[in-house]
Length: 336
Ligand SMILES: [Zn+2]
Ligand SMILES: [Zn+2]
Image (cartoon, rainbow, N blue to C red; front, side):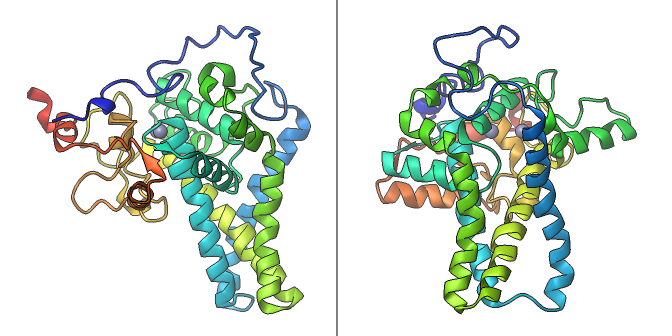
């Protein structure tokens, strides 16, 4: 039997329900209430954004030669791995499956923890992330999608340009997704607004806490520096590019066993690093499903952790996909 909770569109403002764009008006809720800054980015923010994208990226490129030579201790890798998991799952389980798509409900301490953990990925404040992502689902690969690799056309040069845009250039678009239209539910949640507005604090924690742990663990300044490099910069850089690959690669490549309105694909080789988010074709076919890797052998560690949270009683009303629901979305089941 199909799960009745899973049949309707998601939360208010979620895919399927957001109001028409281009009707931005001043409402009682300020559009910028969930984050610092206004609805348009200023030059200072653009420079800050470039630094936050560029510095971890350079660290990531520099990391490989360093790993072969000197400057990495197993301690650094442990710290980097733990922070990769916490911040990465904060995005996949928290920002994406819980806050954007309401694929499960969370007890309040877990909900706040997920908002903070996802903020440590340095991918923007939670409410802005959710607003952008809901807009992505509403217009996926059509005009209005904030990051479609197909925006410039179908030729090879157009796709190359589009992939770059979908991967990172889209973040420099000066127009922001109106949060009061796409995330009104989160703007009403005072705890989440507070977490969202303290984004710079989470950036500092994300970069400095690994360094502090490395310093105390090794009782040396050098340990603090290498932990900052690996657990801070390299970890953030890798997570950025994995997350952005879902927007770029997973809308241009991969298998499409499920029916969706867009070009989303399942990309198996990103599944482990992305905690199961790269089963993106299923996700667009069934956005509220708590599990994205629904076929045999499809690794989805986010779904596994949601299951643990459910067993602990911290998560409830989880929208697990039923076999019938999955079958109904298969391309081969289209005739039925
Ligand atoms: Zn997508
Ligand atoms: Zn989504």
